[in-house]
Image: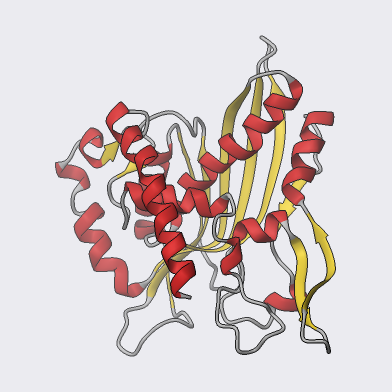
Length: 295
């Protein structure tokens, strides 16, 4: 019998959970080919992963062993808020080479597509569902509902495209503690998650999405503060591509014993880091504008 390993990680903070998941994958994962391998690439390390972050907004939130910087984190959060939704192609135009989707587009405009009519004008056809608004409204009406869910998968499209959405679903429920405080719990499922190249940015981005888009709006409508409860991150295929293994060893696995946790991580709520994060927004918006003009 040959089975894909199932690994479960529970840690207090985002940075600790990210590191523990990578180490768990490196030590317990199996070897797999992928459809994205180039000739001579080593086999990838793969597993099914379940990561629970008990306090998503508690520092240390940022791990230094991820391929990016503060600007990239801010840009990804803006993308999850819809700032690049207009980069998605018209799926009925075979000559359109823009993106297949954005996560925000699938969540906030699920099911929509464009079609060229005989008169040459572009018309929106089909149906459009704003799942973000639907989830917020459900949580406000009934915080303990089991139905506050969003999905991305569109089988009429995604079974055929080369690179369909990795994110599959988000599920929310609000718990009330003995003091009457409200805690937003969330499950997020990915069918495929690049553990080294994308996972940290994915998790960081959705922690901020949950806070700024979901929790803040639910709290505003309810007239109550919504705290961030645990985030459960589920990845069917959690993997390090073979071409990235040596880089991951050099930047993380070979350094753990010689560096403290404080040296390997950063506090997002440190005023200096937070200022860098906030000041990145104008640069990113300018970058998006320049991309729009050139394309």
